[in-house]
Length: 126
Image 1 (cartoon, rainbow, N blue to C red):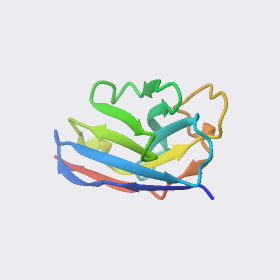
Image 2: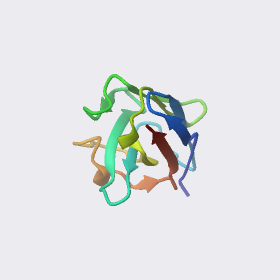
Image 3: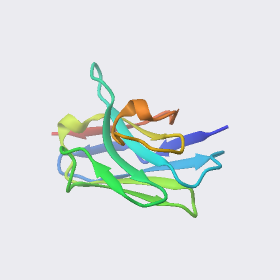
Image 4: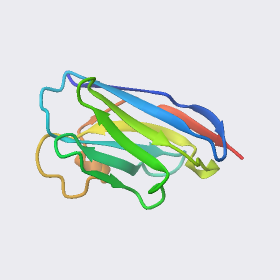
């Protein structure tokens, strides 16, 4: 079965950087959308960044554009999220996700994704 395992979360001060990783196993397709999402306590899960593993096209939420970078190492079946300039309000559980192959109208919409990791906590202190 498909498994997504995130790592790399932790605690940083405002303005700091972190790199999240998501190892994918059991997924037999090569062209599909993957994304990073986050959920703070009491808030809905929101899309942060997405990438299509075939075209390499990337998508970012306005709030992180220019500070976060999503990338994918297809040889290692690993998804990354490089985060710079972190803000306290970005404290959340961060999840990676994978969609079934096919058209995804809104790559940052969590409802487009079928497979989810367990999450990794990111805490940003002021």
